[in-house]
Length: 498
Image (cartoon, rainbow, N blue to C red):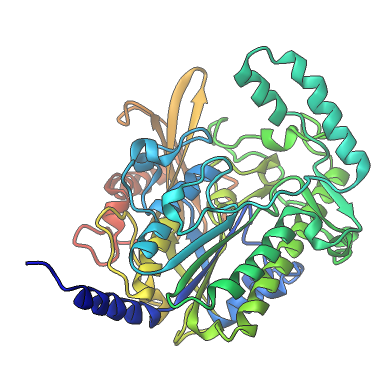
């Protein structure tokens, strides 16, 4: 028996009405942002708009990405699964290769009556996922540099490298390799660079989608403070370089495997950066550029928040902002990310939702980026897909001091003397415990790292090989082997936090 068209129309109307009662989602993704922000107690950073989100919501002191590099962490967050499930451990693999039918975060909201639109850097460059969006993703084009001498330098370096690349693949790699300077201050408008253009697009898009009947999920991705640290001069002027402190631990962790921390090859690909240790004057310039880039990005976030408030949508919208991983600014005599250390795996996470009881507070609860997908679903009243490998932390929003996950998990691959390794890292309330195993044979342990954050928050001394810590290593190994499944809050198999 066929369903009358009138009945179908009525059902659609009811579904739309129900969806219209759900909150909107404003989803900010930020590249290479470490939790050195005013919202995290670092008053030297000028980030008033991120502070606005923090004051109206919650700051997560202990949020951890699953792999500290762009594509793996973004693939993990957007699918709600971990790198060993997405099979994305590099910048060359799309998660759809291993998970062709996975329902992404945006796709799930779209399937449940939301209008979903994305712009800027959400997935890693070149790896968009059309099924995520209601309309095609947009990435406004903008020059990398504004100063003519930097533009000319970059063009010359690319031209010089091109003849050296014989194969097509090598030519493509060569075109990406030669880079201009690592930082730039230019007296130009905000929308000269890509983040300003993304902010302008987000503002105009908000005006359009606010008129739709269905709720929206708007994903806005900013690339700064990713290298190169370019931003308009007015953001550089917010900082006195003489007051910029350098990293206090410019040395590798004692007794750690040599491969645990890499020097930062990404930074070395920029013009004028030495291959050896970065001298202090240059390190201060780099930190100045990084801080300015944060303030520039923050101002773009502010433009979008202003428009959301002007449209009267602030109290109807969940706002979440996350940095895709942390970043080293000279700690361990290293730069960039690409490791399992605290500097790289701990990243900013701010969330504000309508009706939150606790606003302007910080929580020490351990949460993971795979938890963002189920949490947003939970807050929006959507069902949770069965494939998720994270846990909604909505209970933490209701009680920021409650007992939560006993551990968070990250990983990073390494090649050591021709041997392929994977470092699986576990962060408890007190310890970071990393076990380096063979990629193919996890029973083969190559090295272990143990850092006690109670006495060594910078992770400067590996305790794993000290005889007096053997019992602790054995105890942590039991918890580590239980993995993330053993750390589900309240689960029967959860192991008590150490």
